[in-house]
Every structure is written in C-alpha cells, then in structure tokens.
Image (cartoon, rainbow, N blue to C red; front, top):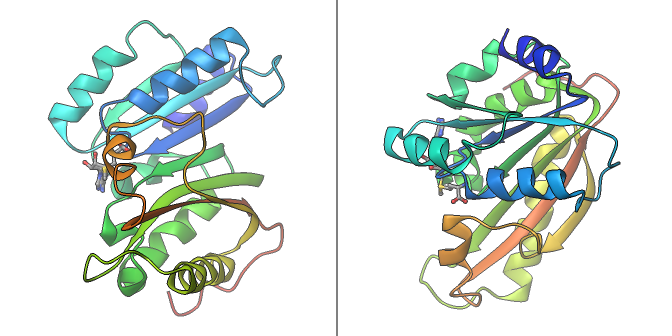
Length: 211
Ligand SMILES: C[S@@+](CC[C@H](N)C(=O)[O-])C[C@H]1O[C@@H](n2cnc3c(N)ncnc32)[C@H](O)[C@@H]1O
C-alpha cells in the first residue's frame, strides 16, 4: 500500500492527497507554507503530500516543481485506479482543485458518485475533503446568485448522501491557493463562479446502495 509505506518512512503524522495536481504549483505552495510554519494546522504536525496526475507532461513538470522537498511523492496515473493502492482510513485530507467536469458536474453525478464514495472509505475518521470547483453558465452569461445558491445546495446534498458533512463553503477559492487553472479561471469571475467546499467524513456508516 502506497500510503502506509510512505508515511512511516517519512515519519509523517498526516497524509494529504491532491487529485489531479497538474503542474504541482499548489503542492509547492502547501509544502512551502508547512516548511515556514505558515499554515493553519498545528505546526508540530508533519504532513506527507501525495499528488496524482495522469497527464505525463504535467506530471514531469510537477516533479521538477517539488523536487527540493522530501515529504512529497508524485504518482503518474489515474486517481480512479491509484486510489485503490491506499488502505481504508489512511488519508487525512484530500484536495481536488478544479476537477474535470466528469468528476464534479452535476449532470455527470452518476459517473462520479462511486469514486467519491471510495474516497470516503480512504479517509481517516473525521478526515476532510476539500473541493474547489466552478459553475459556468451554459450560455456563458454571468452566473446569477440564484443559480449559484441552487448549485451549492445540490453539491452539498449529493456529498451528504455519500457520507460527507459540510464544514463550510467559501465563495471563491482559498486565498492561499495558487494553481495554473485557478489563475485562468479567476480572470472571468462573473461567468466563472468558484466555490470551495470543505467536507468532513461523517462517522456513521452510510448506505451506498444504488451507486
Ligand atoms: C482542470 S485541471 C486542474 C489541474 C490543477 N488542479 C490546477 O488547478 O491547475 C484537471 C487535472 O486533473 C487531471 N486529471 C483528470 N482526470 C484524471 C484522472 N483520472 N487521474 C489523474 N489526473 C486526472 C488532468 O490531467 C488535469 O491536470
């Protein structure tokens, strides 16, 4: 199992997994923040970061971006496959920034729900899932407040069915976050409404029937 081996060899207290880490800019930012102690978590806690990226060019770029850090491992492949390499209840936090539509669009929910229920099993009790995602109007008009609120509630409801309870929703992306796609998406805030969903794994078992 990837997770246990990496964590114990690096003496890390926490495993943080980024799905679709692209060119690794966010991972570097998080690693730098932890190194300088500029992080919201307990400074005595050591994290080990794992990034999964299927695009080989981006994976190679990410490898060079984080090469000076020892507490990170990148995996080149599909997270749908590689997630099964992790033990159940082994990951403290999962981050997904601007996942592709096939992994978050509401109309594709019957494709992605099973994957997030697998993620739920991989999280430690009270582990967290952070998703930064976007709503874009089909006709590329400005997103209305009503459409945004409806979408936010739909996402919360679906993840609730999958065993996640909401901690908070941020309008936009976290201030400290930086990534290639975030830079582009932030250029059109009226037509591309970003939201950050922070979920925690609920302690009780959930019914995965029908997934
Ligand atoms: C919209 S981009 C976001 C990249 C990065 N998170 C950012 O914000 O710049 C989605 C990323 O997920 C990767 N990706 C999509 N499906 C994947 C999969 N099944 N396994 C691993 N990576 C995947 C893509 O190659 C791409 O780098």
